[in-house]
Length: 529
Ligand code: HEM
Image (cartoon, rainbow, N blue to C red):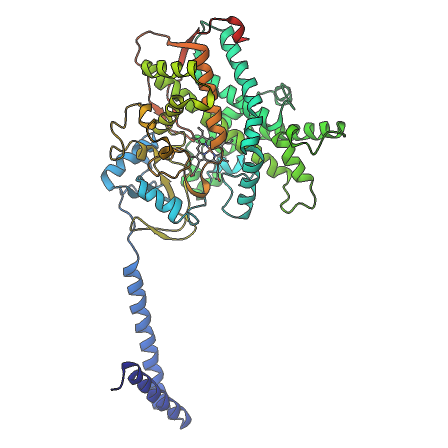
């Protein structure tokens, strides 16, 4: 029996012989016929192959149509995460829409979040910074906006090992303690006066962060330097980062800066940059003054000092420039303060609406110390479930076209993961709109912050998961526990229904600030000093 393969080989070789013969004998007719046949065959084969490939490519996800040029922008409400959740109810957990001339895809289920954050994490490890963020990151030189690659990896590693190791965080406890005690004394001195919890938390967390980063290098000097306090500048910067900007939806219009966001940010950032330079110079001056400073004594170093030491190591494998140091410091300040302050405000607001939960948390404080505050930990987890500080994470931008949930996601699409919607999906929890810390008490290891359980992602997941988790956890619990331990809190108008509505931005804020009245709780006034 002659096999198919043998038969095919015989056929090809007989054609080849014919072609060879025709060429040898210079039989031009046969030669031309053959060439045309081969060309036709090649074209047909190419068409057939590309048709098959096209058939195999998955379709784009479904989604609303929108208008020419502006896309779906005019139909979205001010709370983008709510609008996306409503569209997911209609089109399913993966849908596509155009925002201006940017194609966007929104994912709203744990399994889809897993596909991008774990199964295809390298493709989705890139981000697309808004114009304002490009300015505050000195052109993508910080951790959050730098492209995925060795620069990002080294910077993140430096941050995690030099600022976030358990050892260093425990050492920084003194800074947290100092700043939180300062806040408690201030509140005590103003007892009976209404307090804005968001502002109070922001001031405290900002001071904790700056103290951990550069100690008291410029304490009180920044205002005389720029005429504005660092707190006001940080606030303005965060406001501008969260402002919807036409330039981000229509990159071709970016150079016109129609809303002036870029101009405004450059103005604010000029002052921030000045302060950063001043801090670095002061630090370097202090170092030369204290020549015999125990430079090898890691115990004494703050984060800026560690970075300056890396900069000075000329032979360092991965040297760092002054601009990169500034980019990193600003990143940590912006990323670490508003998120923690806003979460503290939400936790207080939810507890003010649920006095029984507040009572249980205060009771636990009377009995246990910080590391053992299981109920308080559940309050924080539940707060971040209902009000995740970054509800759509930072949009990812796939580096190549790929398939997610059976649909094509083209390269360069903006991909949002609606964590807020996942957290409130009744498929995964009972009464999802109810504030109920008890749901985190049973099986707490199932609900860690590390992004391993795709039903709960307040800090994101995958390669670009928030590296600040250990610091955030400590800052959140310590401040909240201190406020509850030292004071009782009342709403200004007794029996008023607290407004718990949200305002979307780079951080998910409470629409109306939480203003409450503190009263003394501890028996001994000396405990407030
Ligand atoms: C309540 C507190 C916080 C929340 C809810 C939060 C949330 C997040 C989220 C959702 C991301 C994006 C993750 C992703 O895309 O998968 C992120 C990234 C980041 N966060 Fe946080 N964060 C908090 C506190 C902090 C703190 C205290 C710091 C620093 C001290 C910090 C520094 C960063 C940085 C540097 C990134 C960028 C990581 C990267 O791109 O590799 N965050 N955070």
